[in-house]
Amino acid sequence: MSIAEKAIVYATLILADDNVEITADKLEAITKAAGLNIESIYFNLFAKAFEGKDVNELLLNVGSASAAPAAGAVAASGDAPAAAEEKEESDEESDEDMGMGLFD
Image (tube, rainbow, N blue to C red; front, top):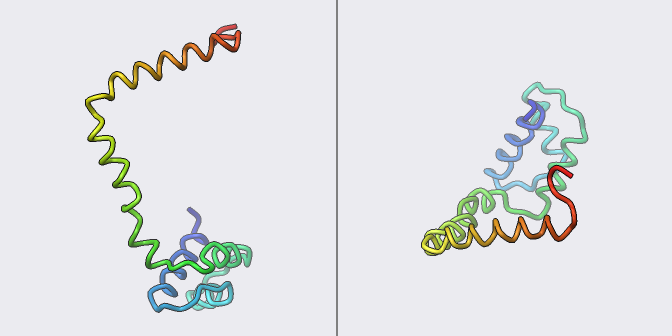
């Protein structure tokens, strides 16, 4: 991650912490106050990326989406070896069906 990207991420976090709307002008003002000279394209990209989104909510929900698949994987761990064998077999069969192999 470049210094410009890091600076704009920090500026975004500052605005989000103050519950201020994230705009290109505000991001530019914060980075200029820090004495950084950053290309204007970065400000527009980040402003559009976070337009209408609550950054604080995004930060708080980072781990919640990945917890459900992990719990499902633990529950199905008894069937995991059989599923892995089936997948390996289907991958091999699919290569043969195409009429080409790895060393053709």
